[in-house]
Length: 285
Image (cartoon, rainbow, N blue to C red):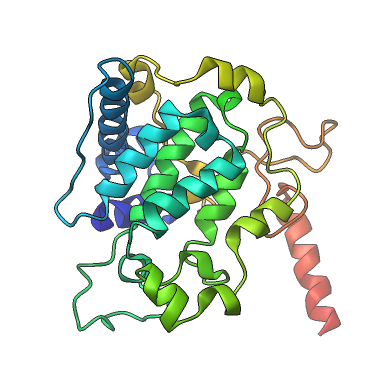
């Protein structure tokens, strides 16, 4: 998982990546294939629970990676409550935080290279991978979710920001007893609720509740898995994310991606404008 993430991150930030072979290069990283495997496992678990009324046992090698990812995604498919903003935070708190997903071990919060006893084998973007899977569902079926892609984008940014104690430490005991995270830090869920524009305006809670389980044909789900360009190409050397031209009449257009640390969408500028800004900045100094 770590190697695939490093490959896709390197591809998206490299100025020398081939545009003509972009799709093949993205698939070659192995990251989209892993997303499909996890979504397939979650879909099969939800299918057996919903249609066959069978209990499903999920367990991976470590017991805290896919063991959290797959059931959480299956519950997103099965229960419309978890597709709300409040329900999604409850789902993460239940299946990742209370279950004991080791955020510190997997994310390496506050540690430099080789500070985990010289072994980086425990570092892996497991929770980010889960958020990517949720993005695939939101991207394909937006009307079924109360939150939108930007909600997930902000959450993914704060997995590694260490600004909030919600996603720190390896277990509940470390958060509550050893570090007293709840008393000393802010909650990421409260922050996300305070940010305007993260809710999906087309979401119909009543219709989603009546629809119940979200079980689409599996080939439809897997064949529409795409690269989360808002996340992985955010700081890329080439223009990948749709931006707003400075003279655009529509502001912002439907496909505009707003930077999480800025209130206004990112706008394209010419080299002359950039040179003028740089010259003015140097004059001010």
